[in-house]
Length: 163
Image (cartoon, rainbow, N blue to C red; front, side, top):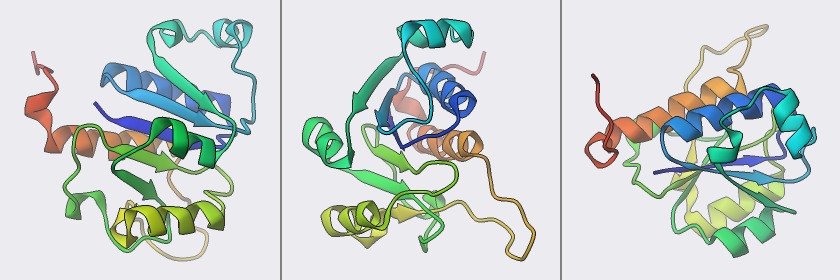
């Protein structure tokens, strides 16, 4: 399974969608505060996230606390500042996939910490057409594409069927 790490997610529907994707792949969802929404039982129930109680969700006050408690051995940060794609990287079961908030990405301090601790090859991005007035991918879409690339590369280890 993979660990999906959201740094300061802002939009509850995106986080809910990502949680569902993590749940169906048997992963763990890590949420690094601040969150742009409430995640208590009432809010989750109101949003209709009936699978949330079966999802392994872990919360952290900040990025340093996440690094200390989760202690990832391998981590990939998905950022527009990367020079490689997940297709150029061998992802492994147990990897942590880190994504920034919808409007800001991750702070420069997190980017630098990832480069220092995990190396420059830990920065990945999904390619998109360049140019003015082009939209970027939704956070949920980005997580789904990245996570399923990891599943594709390690499909035999997931116990999934195509039936």
